[in-house]
Length: 335
Image (cartoon, rainbow, N blue to C red; front, side, top):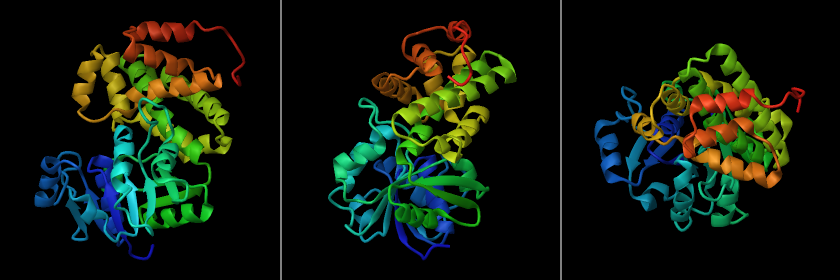
């Protein structure tokens, strides 16, 4: 177990709350921050997040608040767990108040909506290149982490020693943290898997069965790897926790909101109705556009991602999308 530290977790959604619970159980003093008083107040009053993680009480070492200055004052670490669309604004708010000696990491998955930039690029733009940073990814449903079920994640930082420090912070009796220096690959895996989970959900919603799901996962991994290698990621990353591990998790289990979103569409719901039914951010819906923008920049073919984009943002019928994928020209599997 790591030496006890004071950690600010930014984001009171299911993932941020789960990480705060994990860190508190690891013996750290945890300050959980959210920007909306109406959302944060019940957490402090009820000492649990009844909206996202009901029945899991907060430890005494976990406090919540909306005053960012107080939350990050004198902390040893700041861990960002906001949705990707709020990542830049959260860093901008942190910029003037985060202690210079504090470490920074993020557990946000996705590309920045509108720009398609990796989150480490956003971090450099906002905070500069001198701040040590790390990305946390891997197959980790918030509810299972919050309940203390066994989980493994990857912590990626260009500085291997810094990755180990962040991993030590997270590592505990129910969570094993591995390290990597492949920040780009780990970030890309965490982003693209959400798009592919929507595809798997659509296929299952259409009743296409286990064969189709396995094919989507396998060919989806090929798309992820092609793009990942093109942007500088390492092949072994996509064969690990942040690649195939997270991909299998989100494509096969209904705890994944991206998969549930796809299921609703496959069963005939409109995109708008599917969003409303989920009631939380569906990262893959925005990431699909940014993934294609990145793929086109590097000249990478991503047929599954292309069809998901057409269904979500161009009104294409899901069955037609599958027919288009099946009608593609024959080619060697390795391509």
